[in-house]
Image 1 (cartoon, helix red, strand yellow):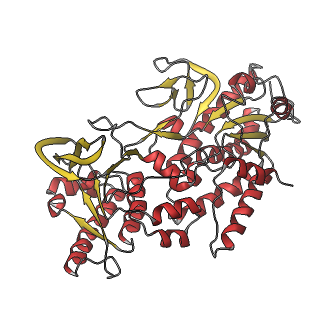
Image 2 (cartoon, rainbow, N blue to C red):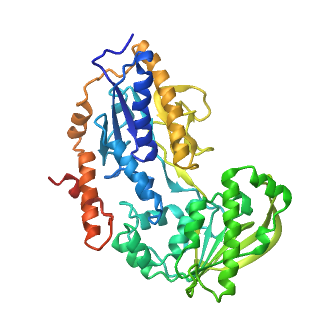
Image 3 (tube, one colour):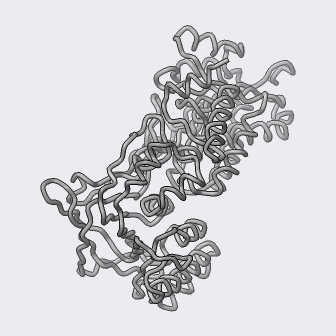
Amino acid sequence: MRMSENSELRIAVIGAGPAGVYSSDIFLRELRKRGEELGLGTTARIDVFEKLPVPFGLVRYGVAPDHPSIKFIADALEKTLDNPDIHLYCDVEFGKDITLDDLLPRYDAVLFATGAVEDRPLHIPGADLTGVHGAARFVEWYDGYPDGPRDWPLDAKQVAVIGGGNVAMDVARELMRDADDLRTRTDIPDNVYEGLRRNQARELHLFVRRGVTQAKFSVQELREMEQLPGVRIAVDDEDFDLDEETIKAAGGNKLVRQMVEELFAIREMAQDMEDDGNVDYAGNPADRVYHLHFNALPVEITGTDGAVSSLRVERTRTGADGVMERTGEFVEYPVQAVYHAIGYKPAAAEGIAYDEHRTVLANDEGRILAASDSAQIVPRLYATGWAKRGPVGLIGSTKSDALLIVGHMLDDLAAEAGAGALAGDRDAGSIDRLLAERGVRPIDFVGWKRVDRFEREQGSREGRKHKKVTELERLRAIAHAE
C-alpha cells in the first residue's frame, strides 16, 4: 500500500534543541530523496514540541555565553525552523501537556530529542557540603535558564573545578572571567552580570584525573582559556613529561594531537606569564591565577561547620592506553567552593524505558526498546542526540545520529504503511484542538521571533547585540503579544 499523493507523513519531535531541529531537517531532505521509492511520498508535516517558551535547547541554555560559535549555530537552527513543513510548539511539555497516548494516534512516528539537564552525582566524601555545586545548575544560572536560579554564591576566594571536558572548561572560564568584558561581548542578563561583578574568586584549580593526552578539551576551549583578561595560567611541568608510547598514541588521532599541541603551547605561555612578573596573556598585571592540573583525582572534600574548606587530591599515573593507576600520593588544596563537571544525565521521558546503566532512553541504534534489558523494539518510537547516545559528542555527532535514525525511520515507516499501521488521525488541526481544550497555549515560530526581536532591541539600547530575557512569564507575554 502506497501513501496517497494527497497524504503526508506526520512526525512529532520532542525537543527543539540541535538534535531535534537537525533531525527534522534531515528527515525532510531524506524523504524527498527516498520517499517515492519507499512508497511514502515526499512530503511530511513535522511538529516540534519544546517544554521551554523558546527553542534551541543547550545552544541557548547549556553553552557558555562567550563562545563565538553560538551565534552561528543558533542562526542555522533558526533557518531550519523557518520552514513551512516544520511547526514549532514551544511551552508544551511532554508528560504534562501532552502524552504518548495523545501523540501515537496523531503521528506516524515520535522522535525523542530531549537532551540532558541533570548532573551526574559526585561520589566522594564531602560531596554534600555547602559550597559543592554541580555544573548544570551553575550553567543554568549564567545562561539565564527560565527555571534556573537567579542568584549564585560567588564569595569563595579559592575554587576547585573537577572535570576533563568542555563543560568543566566553560565553568572554570566563567569563574575567572571579567564581568565587564563578558557583558560587552555576550547576551548575559543583568543578574548574571551583577553576580560576576561581585565574584571573589582569585585562585582556581581545574583537576583532570587522567593525563594530558586523555583530556577531552577542544582546541577552541583552550584558546578561550588562554585569553582571559587579568588571569595568569599555571601548570605543573611534571604533567607534560610524556613517554614515547603516549606521544605516539596521541599522534594517531588528529583532534587529540591538536589538543596536546595546544596544551604544550599553554605550558610555554604559563612559564612566560610567571617569568614576566605574574601577567596575563596581553602582558598586563594579573590579579587571578588559573591552575591546570592533570593526573589529579579528587578523593575527598573536607569541611568546616558544614561548608567546604579543602579538597584532597590523589596523584595518578595514566598509560598510553588511557588506563589510570592511583599512586597513594595526596595533596590537599584549600578551597571554599567545588564545582563538578563530570557529565550530564540525559532526561527520562514518560512512558519510555530508561537504561540506567548507560543513562539513555533504552534504544537500539535509535529505535526505542520495550525495556533496557530487552531486544524488543517499540514501533514508531525513536531517540536521537544525547537521549540516544548519552552526553558525548558535539554538533557533528548530532548530525551523524540524525542521519542514522532518519534512515531507520523511513525504512520502518515504509513497512508500517504497507501494513496499514500508521496513525489513524490524519487531521493536522487535531493536536491544536487538543491543546486548546487543555488550556495550553503554544508559542510558535512567530512568537519566538517576537522574543528574539525584543532581546535584540534591549541589547541595542546598551550597545550590545543581544540581551537575554530570563523570566518565564515575561517570555510568554512577549511571545504572545500582537
